[in-house]
Length: 195
Image (tube, rainbow, N blue to C red; front, side):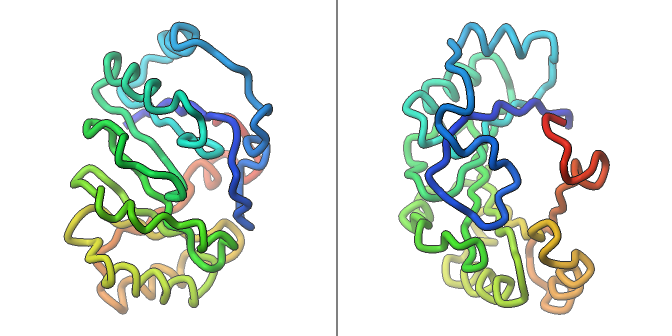
């Protein structure tokens, strides 16, 4: 499904594999009203909008923005690091919760209380840098009963883990997860921004 990204500036995390370092500083974006965001989205006209970052929930107006977007779009998603409370995210918003693995350098930032707020429309994402990350993610899958609560995605950190290896591990272990790759990097290249 075609999707328009709204990238909010600012992220207090420092993941070693961050692929959007330009969005880390809080002042890397420009403040815009909901009306200005709506006007920018109108000509694009996709059925799905995804709010990402940086870390969107670090912005005080993220929840009001999500509510506003729900009045305009049938499908609204929020991609978040998992370091912030998701309990106030509207139920109609599909949350993509990026659980930080040890290889990210930010595993201590995971807010495990968020596991109480998983819904059927939640997706848990593990970005993996190594076999050790994969084994850690498998443990979390069982420990938190994730596959029975929501969709679980496993993805390779670009340039750190061979997708063929990850596919083989998932198949060998018959894990109830979906493998994800950063398709935009395959199509437009790893350095492309704004695609």
